[in-house]
Length: 208
Ligand code: B12
Image 1 (cartoon, rainbow, N blue to C red):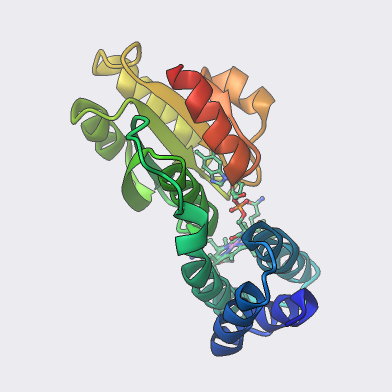
Image 2 (image 1 turned 135 degrees about the horizontal axis):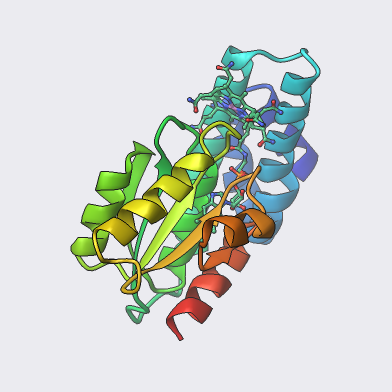
């Protein structure tokens, strides 16, 4: 099974072909990380480019995203294998107004794989729900945003944590395509990570 075939099937939104392709690639011994990066994530990048260029519209983006999620589902056991000790408690969600969850799900999976207990709050998560998660014992709050228009809701959550007297009790890590280290500094987040594997590293560092 070639990675190019899986890549193309994601772009074409062929979920069952992606499922079969990922299974075949794993059976052939192709590294899960290569399948993830070179086929699934690379395809979503291409979908984003086509959307920007006006070649793809929301429906195409949506069916490609479904195909990607199907592939991720097959990879999940491989990505989370090996986690044993409870390394800490993380609550993660996509901020209010934002429905993108593929990246957030991937970060959640990698954290689980690294032994963290993950409370996935889902998408369109308001400040109150993040505050509640911190009150319920999360040591780290992870926020994802894919839209420049929803990024500012990260800052709102940080303000809400401060208002609830919780800011010094939890660490805040942020990510998502438009988010940068500079933005994290600007809003007073404790860490930023550009991808799921570095997210795990950063969360480990925060709790060390
Ligand atoms: C798939 C997709 C969709 C799907 C989402 C399906 C789903 N279940 O997630 C659908 C079709 C629903 C969608 C809708 C929209 N989308 Co859209 N979408 C995308 C697309 C193509 C891919 C995103 C993706 O999944 N990437 C793959 C994952 C793995 O990458 P990632 O999310 O960046 O995550 C990684 C890192 O960022 C990081 N990370 C992510 N989260 C976190 C969290 C933490 C704590 C940490 C540490 C790290 C981290 O780690 C992840 C793994 O490595 C992007 C283009 C792109 N290249 O980003 C556009 C894009 C994000 N969408 C865009 C737009 C405009 C929209 C819409 C407004 C379109 C419309 N007119 O309706 C709507 C908004 C809906 C809403 N309210 O949220 C724009 C945003 C432009 C902007 N600057 O704001 C983009 C960039 C496309 C473009 N090039 O124009 N979209």
